[in-house]
Amino acid sequence: SIKKFPLEAYGAAAREELVQAALDEITKNYREASLSNVARSYGVSLAYVSECVRTQTGRTYKELLQKHRMELRRLLRRSDWNIQQIITYVGYENTSYFYRLFHERYGQSPREYRQSRAARTRTPA
Image (cartoon, rainbow, N blue to C red):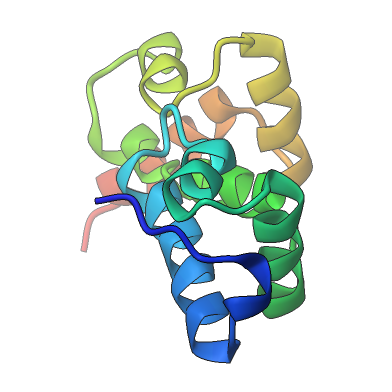
């Protein structure tokens, strides 16, 4: 159901709903998450929803999406998928970009991260 509101009709509650819809898009559709989808379904501009997200969360939509995708690193711990499969699964097409983002966030490569986690779980109790 498409909700159409004139921009000036957006009060605080409606803005919160809009931001929540944007955050839901990240968690439920993180592979292809698009703020344009949210803007379109609420009948507002991309710039408007983008500004609402930034104002309410202190981060840009892209930053929030990257953070969520990077937190899926748990797949590196619990999965027998290879790293390329995981990168594709979380929605990155550019492998080297994913590696760079991962390294910036965690200070190690996905492979190093996986090996360090595996070593920890193998340690006898």
